[in-house]
Image (cartoon, rainbow, N blue to C red; front, side, top):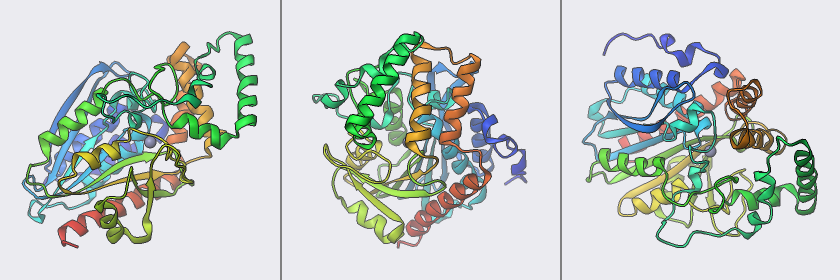
Length: 379
Ligand SMILES: [Zn+2]
């Protein structure tokens, strides 16, 4: 291994607000190279905000023939990938994953590269990828509660009268239903309006197809024990990385996770009328987690989510998300106002506060380390 100075990596030199997709990518590739990981790229068909090429990069570290595997996915929700990417890069730099350990680690870097580059939570088709992992041969879920409020999210707010009318109507609906109940309806997802919120799509997204391809290409058929992590931010208490198992029903992987993490683990069982106090929607369908559990039902498989809390959702998060939604619907992301909206959104999902940064990176490293040790020691 060559000598290496991590301070040379852009992600450790620049302020969080200055980071771009290209810098995340360059740092990840350098760290993977330094670790001697095998690298593979899955090119995305569109360009990024700086006209850069977009890719989901994959690094296979540790023992590529191992029968025990860790999978770490970042950037399902585009802009949340700034946190996830840095944690993946740090883990590659700082952990000694030797090929003799009998454990392989599959790092899937920025599975929604378009969303990371453009600093959006959704993908290039306005889809929330965590509503998109469904069987599209079956009838899609319907959300009548969303239908009743969709116009609030599709109005052209460049017109001042319409904007005022929309704001008035929004206040009335929040008052009538209560903010939490309203968001539970909206965040459950919808499959009819590509100009709406929490749109799950009408076919598998590029990221969905690519994730399946990556798992097929790089997890050997003899992999019998797998622990998978999906790295997120934006829900929960500020600076608290919550370790969650999210599934449609109990399955053996949850008991496995409890044996490794004990009280660190928070379990959310999703269903049409379910609610949770975690800040993530328990009423939604199409989670990556649920699809992974189904995909690996013939293995010893555990799917976990790390969800790092930031600011308050109602007063900071949703206004930032709505501003970004309207910006891409009718506005100009390259305008001064557009850049300001992007900055607000980035700061919600990736706070510049150095203590927030330190906390979430430290805890995420602990969570990943525990999984590696559990697999390595047959715990
Ligand atoms: Zn997320």
